[in-house]
Length: 151
Image 1 (tube, helix red, strand yellow):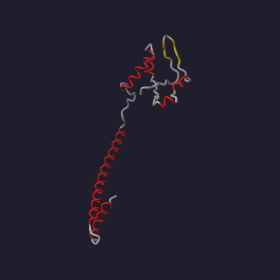
Image 2: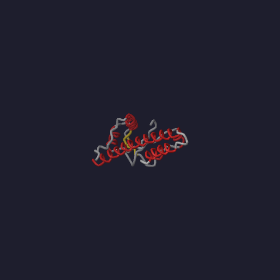
Image 3: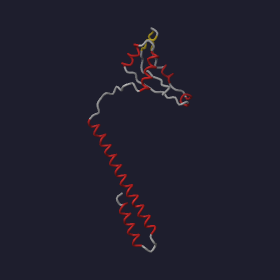
Image 4: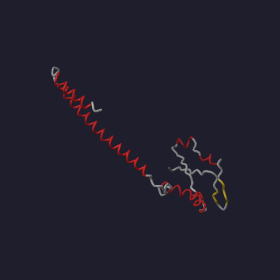
């Protein structure tokens, strides 16, 4: 995130050097990364500026320095999300049920792996039997089919 470009939406007035400057939407086109920048691995990130942030930028004399401070705070994780709503009870229940389903599937997967390993062991023992021991081989095949029948 070394190369972060803040894109200002709409028209905003920022006082710089005792002048009111207006950011034109056409000038925002200049902020797009070219092919060479993309090749170098640079990334453009868009941020929507809140009205409170705009007021904070206007209070400072040097908007560029204030934007740099804002970017540094974003990199350090010092900015707080404006989403302050609590999760609804339904969202919590749905989330919990998903986790319960995942745990149930993990248990089922472990059981199936154990059955598969047991079936492989029985088949290995059947391979060791003599060719004329048909009854014993049939019994072991029935055991394996019983294990695999649970699928």
